[in-house]
Amino acid sequence: MFLKNKTTVNKNRGRLDIVRDVLSIASVTVRKTRIMYGANLSFVQLEKYLKLLQGNGLLEHDGDSGYLVTEKGIKFLQLYDDCMERSTRLKEEVDKNSKDMLRLETMCFSNKSGDKQVGNGKDDLK
Image (cartoon, rainbow, N blue to C red; front, side, top):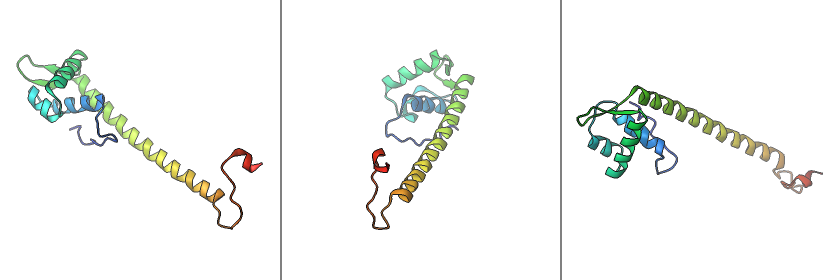
């Protein structure tokens, strides 16, 4: 459901990534062990996140052994996906801008004519 964009820059996941994983797994009623293995958490980590997410109304426990994402949790997942998409677009824009700046630098300061190359300092252009 919401696990399609699971690319991260770092090898280690952040807290929000873990929350996303837990809530995505609980998009259908699941047991603790399914969440633990699906989100790749230790039992101690799982307990911490279950308590946190239930306390904030993102995840509900059915009283038996099942966990299910709440409406608030679904809104979190949607907002998380939107945020990640915007972040990806912004990163692409920053990368494009950096390449354009490098091209501008090359256009102005490359030494193709054999003349002495002008340095990067402000005083060099005076």
